[in-house]
Length: 109
View 1 (cartoon, helix red, strand yellow):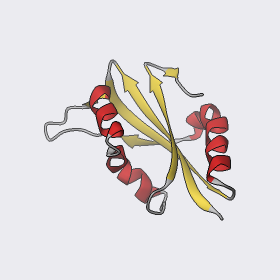
View 2 (cartoon, one colour):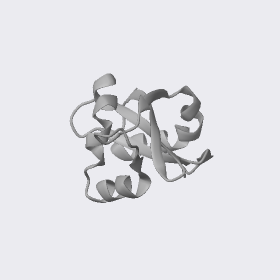
View 3 (cartoon, helix red, strand yellow):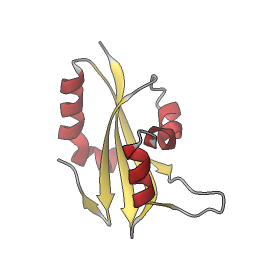
View 4 (cartoon, rainbow, N blue to C red):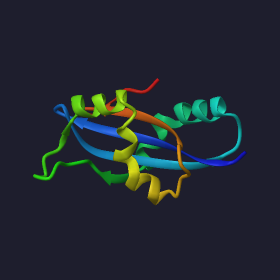
């Protein structure tokens, strides 16, 4: 069945999450096939992905990657991607691939 899937990029500079980028696809296939597709295209998709603001606290301070990592371990990082999900009109519990870009270096598979 077709669904919207996303490659999301976590831009990290000097230990802080400074930006998100995302690119969507409308794909058919099993979840495993879709994940493989996202991972296979992740490096090339980065240059085509749309920019999104990074999460900030009430004082405008950027989130540290350590904080993001803690949220991810708790399964709460999805809340940080709400604007991306709304922009691409994805369903609840979307299939995504998150790739970190740390100080300009790609860290995908």
